[in-house]
Structures are given as C-alpha cells and as structure tokens.
Image (cartoon, rainbow, N blue to C red):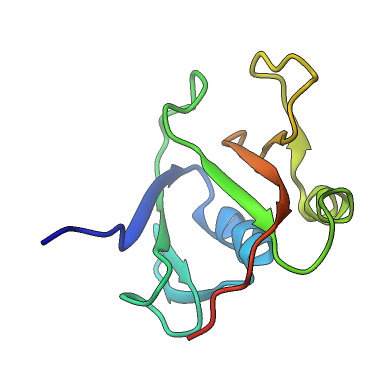
Amino acid sequence: MACRISELVLDAHDPHRLATFWCGVLGFTVLTHEEDSVEIGPGEGFGGAQPTIVFNRTDNPKREKLRLHIDVSATDQDQATELERLRELGARPVDVGQTGEETWHVLADPEGNEFCLLDGKVEPVTS
C-alpha cells in the first residue's frame, strides 16, 4: 500500500490572485471558492490523476526561499515559448543561487513563491 499526493496547500496573501495565476499556468479550473480559500484542479476535480492546489489566506509574510517548490514542464510547446507565456501570466525570474548553466528557469509566482520551468515537454494528463 502507498499514498499519493492528492492536494497541495499553499499560504497566500491573496488566494484568488494566486488561483488565477496557477489556473493559467496549469490549465486548471477553480473547484471551490470561499472568502479565505480557493481550491483549483483539473477538470475531474479532487482525487484525479493530478493533485489539486488549495490557497489559504494568511497575513504572515514569506521570509525565505521555499523548502518545497513546484516544477512544471510544457506540454505543447518548447521551453522558450512556454517561458514567455508564463512571464505574460505574471511569473518573474528569480535568483536562488543558480550558476547560469542550468537547463531550467527559476521563476516566482505573483507572491514570490519559487517554481521551476524544466526543459523538455511532457504529455498532458488526460482523464
């Protein structure tokens, strides 16, 4: 027997703003929407092949690099094109000590949470 990740929970100053950003990045939809919490996920909702993401409101500031971050890979275009798309959604490059020789790009979402855009494409998840 084993477990699998069913949802990721992130603190956010503005859960709705982050939900909108990450829906654009991942092609997810809003599954539940409350005043201080938003859950996003794939069309089939909770319990499907991909974990959902819950954004819970917090007033605590982000103080340092996250100990856990999300890596994403393009599904239908090359890395350079996907990087431009992510930047248009509001991602920005950040320096966490890279050498410049990496094959991935380190970015931050609108609240400064780091994530990486990996090189290469992956197959999209289908229901």
